[in-house]
Length: 299
Ligand SMILES: Nc1ncnc2c1ncn2[C@@H]1O[C@H](COP(=O)(O)OP(=O)(O)OP(=O)(O)O)[C@@H](O)[C@H]1O
Image (cartoon, rainbow, N blue to C red; front, side, top):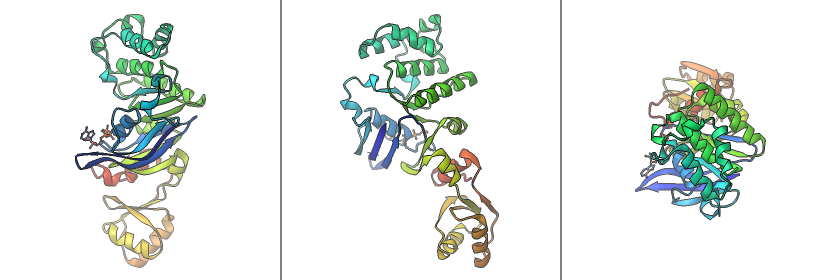
């Protein structure tokens, strides 16, 4: 289990991660989503002791990463597949990691087989690896110590379609045996297929978290108007809470018929009105993070 509590990380007056709390549970794949620069990598770096938090904590099975005696046996980490020593071969990288963790050398061959790197590829220097091969090697390194927790930043990056499916099966299999998986990805379709739980972050703050089903079902109503603020005020007067989602969109939990009636009574023109349910993860993601998107896109 991964527990993040009131985590904040500031850089010279800029708050990259702002009072973030969530858990990633055993037996489940938790998808960590957010626009570029939202704070995903920073949060994951704090989890694995690479970045010191300004305040708050991140623990793995109740312990801070820095306090784990042999961290590779508890948590497998893949944050940047290109950060591996480019002058070493794949086999050397796995062998050094196995020695560091006190694991038998046979684990190296088992991992090479698991991630489908051939023995001739394993002898090649990592600088000559393709991105997908580096990613496979990174996954092999993460799984070497047979950990119960995985923290993966964009693990599908660079993988071919068969590789993406392999990764999906690997991670769902890992979780189904009681493992905890936290993965970030911009591939929303991948997340939609694989994740049980979602944590959505925008501009350093959590904007939604919960089970995928809950979040997709509770998408509510999306309504668009040339006067979104007037609409939000009219809804408020009618006792309906709403949020401005940017680009004229307003999101509310009330059903579309009620929202339409309020707009009619208030004389506010609408350009679109629909239930957000069933629109899928991409629309949910874009509407939840519209205020924090560079492009200002809405659902
Ligand atoms: N060492 C640092 N010094 C200053 N700012 C930093 C540092 N590390 C991260 N940031 C800033 O913190 C913010 C969050 O970055 P982070 O890499 O966590 O985002 P992300 O959600 O992983 O983005 P992406 O989807 O693009 O990978 C960004 O604005 C980034 O520029």
